Image (tube, rainbow, N blue to C red; front, side):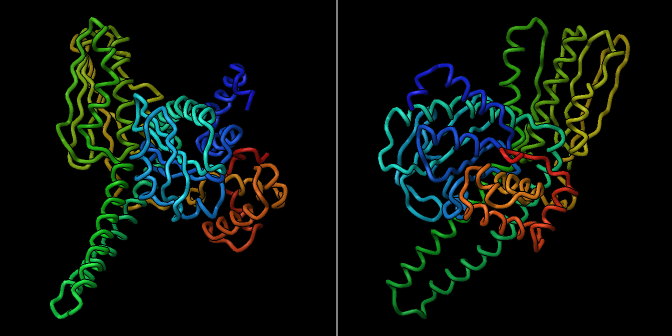
Length: 424
């Protein structure tokens, strides 16, 4: 661990982590942190990723059973900037854990739980991983709140599908538990103590179920007014330190916006406001309005250069995957009004791409399979055991609904799976 005393080494490690793709981020952080704080597994929950808010890496015996309810409880224990050591449940079993949380200026932050191999990790090791997480999680939050155009559509599809599944499961289990409560509360039962105990257990199960559903809603959506307040905070330095008058009018609506809609709306609004200022406007007004099933983002300015009052290509690339469109009204001498219209959802749950069913580690293993590599080669390159790779292969075949490695490889090539991680 002495190399961590070398500032250049530390900077190189941070650079290595900041260069990670989304799929690589958790495995790369886990591998880097393992050099100073050895651990068996890592589980991460991010409040800014509506597609896969829970990510895992490491021992499949642990990671295969991690639940959102467990991570929600762990997140409540965290202290941003510190490593909290606690005895809590992860993967269905109580374990010694190291909990790291973040509270970036932009985004909702993230939490990671490590399962250390030592019962009492050294204070210096805890300090290093806490500092490392504090730095790189800010960058991860920034990228999550400003997603690339090509992943927006699949993010929205995945979030919609997950919300539908949660709703169906919630209704089914709530009905079952409510029926159980009705039976147990019946006066026909003589054993009062047993009835009371069973009633308490069922009531607690209902509370947990509702908590999971509420957490899923929190991760996949945010109230429109709160989303606009975040935008106002981001634009505050511009409003405060600029001679131009910038008026902001929120939607005044608490209806939930899908996370990708909220992120994109903020990006589009910022872009349109900055473009209006560049055209020499002295007054700009930005507003959001929920109109039926759409969100209308309107930026009006009094700039004289209306010829340039057209949405930038980059902004069009943001709204197109979400089914958005523009309305532009530019009049010489009067200024311009540009409105982005974004659907708030999809009429039917879209069919997810087969690869969207796989987590980051499974995508890495599939990339190796597509290149014709054996389990041992993949295990060596990903620094896993051959047994773990076999476990991932079984999961991949099941999720892709194929019966052999060859079929999985063909599907990966047809869908143009890009090599990820260390498999090359």
